[in-house]
Length: 386
Image 1 (cartoon, rainbow, N blue to C red):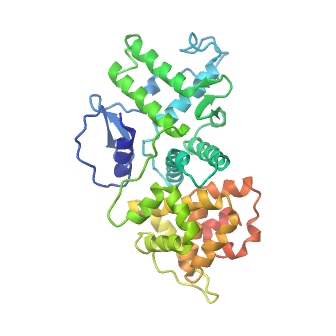
Image 2 (cartoon, rainbow, N blue to C red):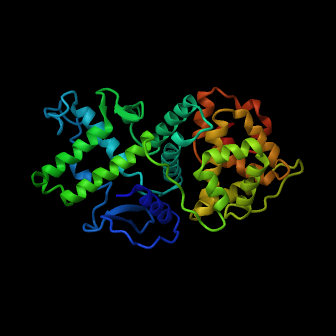
């Protein structure tokens, strides 16, 4: 499987963009459900998905019932592994394999879907960013990997089960490298497929293809892959180039911050999210109208343009505010003459994800020290932070 091709297809399916000509012979392709969620289906087994077929092999829950009296499937290869570790590794495998699935059912799931896939995209970019030093990259890598898992969502044990050893993820308790475990997992079921005939529908060749795709996804998380990128779309080239090249965005911001803010303003002007919002006598935005706009936007499918706008804002959060929150004042300065835009942009930065919420907590930043920022918060942002 070629992950970069699949990732481009994932974005195109997610935002209803035209798919490129199907000139490739793949064992898996995207399909959509009636609720607009999507998954990778097997061409020869159209009822089975890449993320779902292993559910029939889910280990017995060692926390349910009496004390477990069985061994992990791979116990002979990994003697240090117990049934509790096996369950965690299964959850990790399922989480990784569902990266290219689209699961958006409500506002909560939409936020999780965005945070997980945003973090996945950024983990593919970090190793190429020359304007960050190794320490800064490591801080962001830990931050993004946390949210990649947290937004799946996974339980607390799985959330804290892994750590980075150089550019490899290991199961911290056992020291097992995830790439080795997942390869052995697929090899086992491929070699013993007949033993699991009632549970495994796909062929050994398809299991082998799953193995390679899982390991490609893992390489992204570990920073060992070529960076992923959004497909270009007419009229969005400037913002997509900035999203696909974080160094370019950081250079633009360092050299000419007004130019970056102008790109944000231009995107908002042509977005489904934009409207004219009245201000009160003090020149502040009318929060009731802003809130109505926000609620209305939740009912509409997110366009590719709007997605790119959100990505650019969160890149500003992740690569600028993460290291210097004082720069938030630059946003206010750039947009304060258009209060409705200022309110909308700031509120989106703070409420589209919980990235800033975690940053403020980790860095012990008191928003009360930034009244020029909070005065532009819409009702949702006020409820979250004030």
